[in-house]
Length: 626
View 1 (cartoon, rainbow, N blue to C red):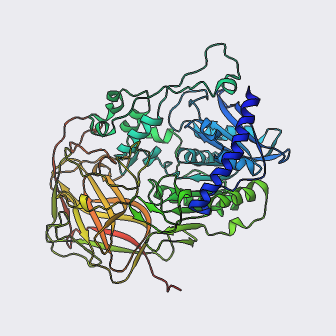
View 2: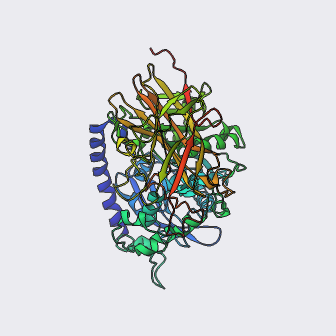
View 3: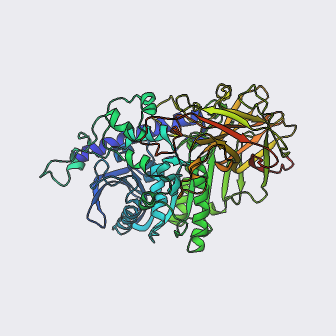
């Protein structure tokens, strides 16, 4: 039965591979996975032992006729390894080019044994899986890793264990490895509500069916295509779930399966619970070359750039220290390879963002796993897409050495509310200006409109760049804009907003959004951030506010590369909510996650000679263009 299944999969693989290749050429040659010369055979649901006796179910893809000792590409997934059995999958792609590919269900997921808790213990399981693969009779001893999102995070976590057989990595969209943003669950101390609800409902299930007692050890290999271990879920009413209170009971009220939802919302960004999951620490050591892939409209882009620098700085040898690379596209989560000659991200046309990813991936693994001298390490350390000029550019460090960090100060006569207000933004410092005030009512939060989000489970909370004018029309959104700029301004690097604030509430949120306003008035969001005021002095502290006392808060807007062209305006939006991307701060100063009542906050943003609120932009001097 298994042989017939393998044969049929192989036949379909060849046909579907040709179809996919032809379709891809039609939308841009860069998107096509160039198939290799080898037919692929399979060993399904092989048990790989971990150090504690738990065994993880792993599919092995073998290239026929490629040799007896082959390098291995490891893909570890919580999303069901069976999905990689499709003929057009990346597993078949790498195997056809002469790699053994191992696709593994992570611990407690689908066919694998053990109990599931997010990211635990992926450091150790990744190490043990690599060790097993490297010591098989068909292995050359060199292992590379590949995968996006959760599949990228597990690579970063494994890298800190430094298995000597881990020879190279391609982690994509892996921006969830810093404890303060563990699992991408929070940002600025606020809960990433839409993403967390969507992911937990769709993928967070901790309960999987198992074979009955006495079942043969090859049960999954024999019956895995007809036996489905994950219970079916009902359709989610996300709009209702987002507004449900208390937040800690959202999954219980919706009748969802057991998940780590309660852990996500009850453990704050400074909680040791996140450290125990195995996320990165400043003292971690590394030694594996990594080619990281991410995009400007993906959450965690700042963390991805941080970990590239950390892995270089803390590598134990020149091999790791000198071989950390990154490619950043303008797209959304795990969609970099889909950039074409006409790339539209949300509503924003960003030109020709195509890039030859698949051949780059092959060259990367050929160099590190097969020893092919192909010059891949001579490419720029960073290859970034500059939005606005809509072009790829190579750079050698992050932040760019030529960056001119420039303060853009907030101005108004005290009426910056909405598009009809008088808010301004300029490099001139303010003097003697009245503060701007607004009312934040958690019962009527400012709606999210695109942005760097993922995994929401619904098109009602899409990612990307959209016209913000409907949001900016609200009275509880402060809008600060430059005059039309006579010459273009390139902003490439980390972004922060330094605000001087006061509020009637003991605790509230402060949001900031960088916007590119086109000459026709269309206002495209570029990047955004949030800070829960209680964390203004650090993630390990919770300091409440006193009514009407002025405090400094720093909002991290991650990073971007955007060219504001001549005639454009640079705009900053300030408010106290961005919902449902982030949970609503109920303004009481309590836990927030276990509360059902809220208070209305009366908030002020100060911009004067004493309290000069400003946006810090990483301006890149313009070079003469050929």
